[in-house]
Length: 296
Image: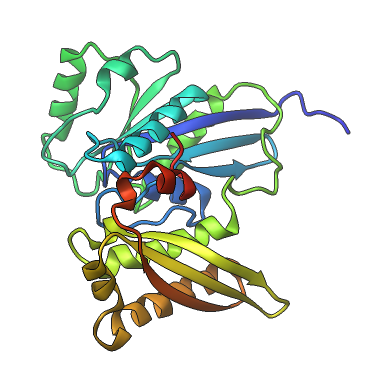
């Protein structure tokens, strides 16, 4: 098999504060919804690789959890996932929400010592305030940063293609890291849990969505349909009652809406069964965090 010596491949980490638009940006670039998107902070919990394949290049994007000061063990492990994306990065995109009143870059000291190039991506330019450009210029000057700046709207797909063209230009010459047919490093089970969790984030308020984890008990693919049994893990009996809802109506709504998206994702009929299980304080339990995929 011949090797294309002109082929380029590289890893691009997408980082930033919660709700900056990291997942939306990756989904827009890929032209496919791999990462779930909601208005709530900390929607993304894991490092998700999205692979863009073209004849002359392969870009492996890392969508990461929003950068925060962790309050409990699960968040600590989420922040370790963010930092792990630095290890293999050929380029880091720091996403800034142009509509955010507070201009701040998390882990600036770490980023200033980085060996890879960093670009500041000002997202949501369709919503930004007129003085955002002045604020950025002052901040960059104050912190002696010379990162290239790109202004985009991930949701409206404004200037995203232009930025992608520039990313391709700086990629190193390298064979593909993944099979050209791959879209992600994650499994079908993982994307099933994410689709269900997205509905919980959308339909429940306050702490409830953040206390939930989704576990796939059974995933059976048949010629004409996929049969899935999933467990929604919560930390308290009261949370279980809220998830189920009066006469089971709340969990039924989650199931119906998740099934619709699963059928679109997999391209075939889906039968989805959901149950709720209580595991007290699982977000602070190392055993369960490891079991649920939150690596140390």
